[in-house]
Image 1: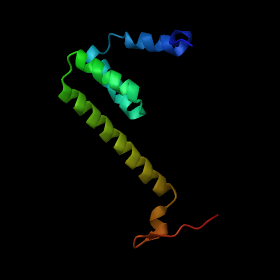
Image 2: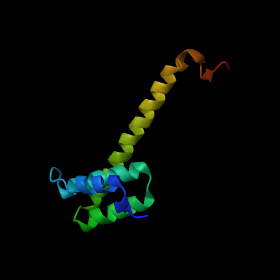
Image 3: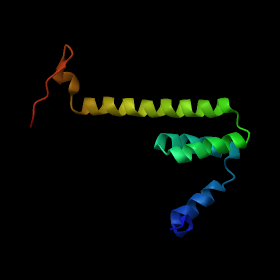
Image 4: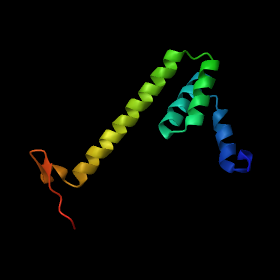
Length: 102
């Protein structure tokens, strides 16, 4: 199986060739995406490529920190919305929660 066999691979290549973003921006966005997706191989490769392209290590670290913070914000907001959706505040009093089975 070769990546070139898939249409998405062709679209990915074309998108990466866009001149709307600088190479630096492409490296940092790519890094942010792969670290939040959990691909260790991809993350290592993206870090290596970013450093080879001249992006300072501190910028790579800041990109990872920002990606983690944004992802944590999404997790927090999702949990709060989920709890509000089941009216958890009404079920919890003084640190104890009582949820009835249906």
